[in-house]
Length: 144
Image (tube, rainbow, N blue to C red; front, top):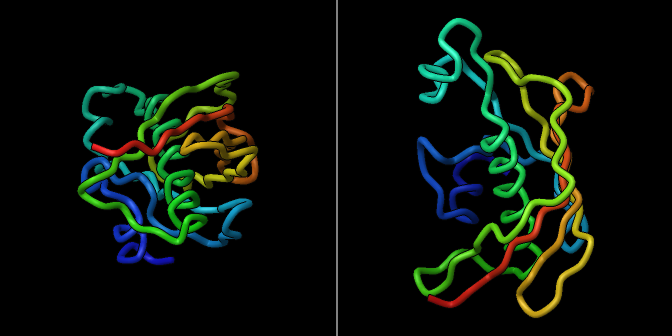
């Protein structure tokens, strides 16, 4: 999936769209996407000017956005103005390696289960094959 198709499956837009491309997707199972991390990211101005590091919460958000794409593709739906896909929980979050400008952050998400609009995922973010962060994520689809 290129950026145009990604934007059809996520309501997020710049500067908060954190998925650049989807390499593989198996609806109902898993997704492999990536985010190109550049020095132009607005958060690097203050995090940290002398040693730019991508904030961990934004790594988690990128994983959640990949999970959102996977969920919408699994439901064969696209976001609508009548519903929202909320981030509902993060468990077992671990940060193993700083993510820096120039890195390509690979997002690997697997569905663990889905029930009544609540989705649980196993998620990992990797740079150059090395684990940068991991977590168990939970998202919920809700009508507005």
